[in-house]
Length: 132
Image (cartoon, rainbow, N blue to C red; front, side, top):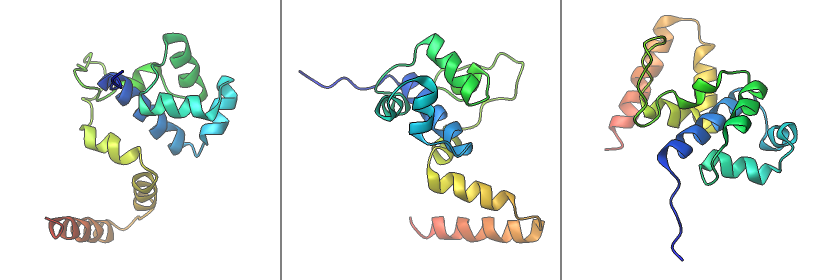
């Protein structure tokens, strides 16, 4: 039997759950406990392997202190209702869904000197350009 690939929306919602959980410094185990689930089930949600039902998504949004719509921001095929900013590009969500990306953003946001921040951006851009 062929393995079924996760739906892109399920993957996106799961990645947003992971990103927000990590932003709060919450473990998969702690989120699972709050949902009365195992951390393995939380992993499956975050990977998009298992779909998150509406009532479960509402629970998760309460625990992670965001509205349910947060999980759909920037989703494939998602259109803005005109009530909020346009969604950020998918790569931003992808970066923030990693522990390295989140750590980088947190550290960068603590730098107060604009010139130093600009130098860091320039340095990272040069390093990325050198990878091509």
